[in-house]
Amino acid sequence: MTRSTNQHDAGTMASRRQFFSDCGLSLGGLALASLLDRAGYAATSVAGRPAASSVHAPHFAPRAKAVIQLFMAGGPSQLELFDNKPKLTELNGQTVPASYTAGKRFAFIKPDAKLLGNRRKFARHGQSGAEISELLPHTAAIADELAILRTMKTDVFNHGPAKMMLATGSPQFGRPSMGSWLLYALGSESQDLPGFVVLKSGPRGPRSGAALWGNAFLSSVYQGVPLRNSGDPILNLTTPAGISPQSQQRAIEAIGRLNRERNHATGDEEITTRIAAYEMAHRMQASAPELIDLASESAETLALYGAKPGEASFANNCLLARRLVERGVRFVTLFHTEWDHHGGSENLEDSIEKTCRETDGPAAALVQDLKRRGMLDDTLVVWGGEFGRTPMGEDRGSLGRDHHIEAYTMWLAGGGIKAGQTIGETDELGFGAAEPQQQIHVHDLQATILHLMGLDHLRLTYRFQGRDFRLTDVGGELIRPLLA
Image (cartoon, rainbow, N blue to C red; front, side, top):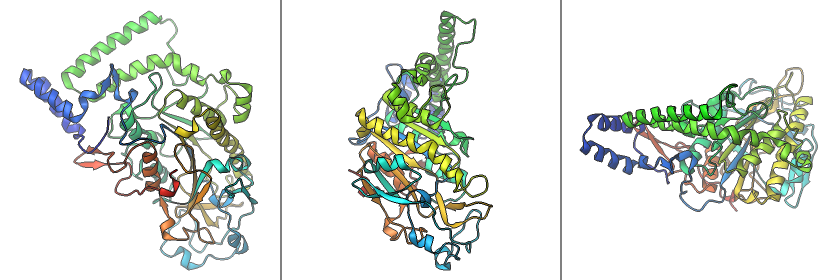
């Protein structure tokens, strides 16, 4: 089902549906059916299933059918990982030239903060010659599978809003996440698992929380579902002790009948979602425990990822992500926190080494595993955080850098991208793109991800409160060098 600007306002449609249903006239029923058909609501279910668990046609032939987003929450330092700047090291300790910081704001430091040189070794890797830090030896080994974007830019320098910007296209709350947009547009091939799944690792959850995978004004059937990688995959999923399968089935059927009666009376789309949630939860009682049981994986695969069954880790989540897309899940986001290396307890010395050890091997293993299974061609992997780090240092007792929104690094693999290249160059100190036309905005990345999934970001819209919304807001251009 193609989603486009002919979508009626959700609130208006709900009130019309309730009016025609309450009037009790056959003519009203006919008019309602006509309205539903024109707006696409008549197709909200296929074979009794909600739209999120059926497949809809894209705008054009896609290159990818699933996305795995490796969200490095906190802002990895591109200067320690991907963007080697000898000039910055040469000028270590000097005051940054005012021409670089004029008109710019930073989260914690002042514009006249001292430049901080990089102390990490870089080398070129693969046939592409990608320059990657010693902190990421496993990523370096897959250099030729990657397209590295060095000139990413976002609009806001605080964690919560910047995470929202990457996840939803807006720094403000109340916009659907990218996974929700994709599920709304394309549906999911998985009948026994949610089409949009969230996995978390690290010492804390990401700032902005559930809004990062929320559905906002889209139906709640399109929201992301967080899974735990130990214990019950979802809290309260297991049937309570003393409840037989027959009793549970009777309860679900009774609740379903009541919900359908209420849905018939009101035409409330959220009731359809509620019915689907009960049915999905019932199916997941069998599918979810099997999903997180990594013991079925070979010893070689577990070693490749560094995964340990029953352990909560980024390594386990990367392996789970592969298992999810294998089972038809459309969008998987992995959040890993502790990339906020300002100095002090989270720094560019031992802290960044620890975070890189946790994530480098599993991220590379995911790409390798997808490739050897023939899945990389149609699975898009996206790595990166909400912003990067400043060329200036931050004095907190140990090496650190402040938030930087002008030029940071992300990488992509698989799913129709042209691998083995680095796109964009930064200036000699790493403040911004060397040339303005090399700048890549977050909306450009989002537009390109949608394109690879067979969607035109200008046509994927939803009318809400009198205006058409889209993931890329009023911006977004395709990153054409990225496309294979």
